[in-house]
Each structure stands twice: as C-alpha cells, then as structure tokens.
Image 1 (cartoon, rainbow, N blue to C red):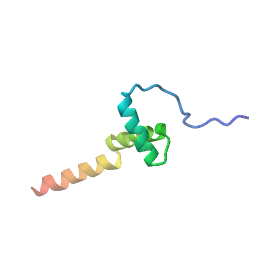
Image 2 (image 1 turned 180 degrees about the vertical axis):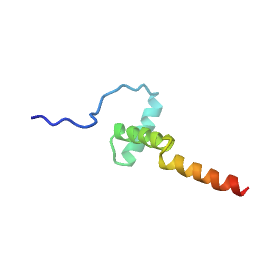
Image 3 (image 1 turned 120 degrees about the horizontal axis):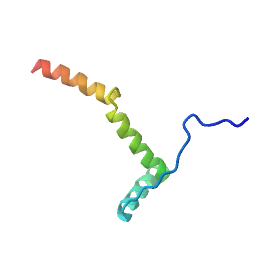
Image 4 (image 1 turned 60 degrees about the horizontal axis):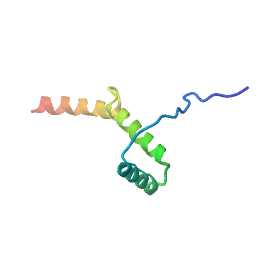
Length: 71
C-alpha cells in the first residue's frame, strides 16, 4: 500500500526579474537552504503573521486593547 503525504507538494511557476532572483538565490545560499524552500518560508511566515488568530495578530489585538485603554 502506498502512503500519501497529508499535504502533498505542488509545483507552480513564478516569474521574477533576474536581479531579484539573483538576490533570492544569494540569501538562500547564505542560509544554506534551497531557493524554493527560502521562498516558501517567506510565504509561510507572511501567512502566519496575517492569520486572524495567529500569534502576531493576537498580540497586536492585546497590545491595542492595553494601550488604547491606558491612553
């Protein structure tokens, strides 16, 4: 029986200016990760940051509540 991944990876195409891709490759190499993994990490971080119930969003709501009531 073949085991399937719970969330399989899908390939997609992304068009970037050559100069931007060079910068991305340099940053990924500096962090010793593949270029695609580095890009995926940025996307995942941004989605987590903007998730309505994510840690950053909850912290911002808490800070807003504390500082707005104290003002």
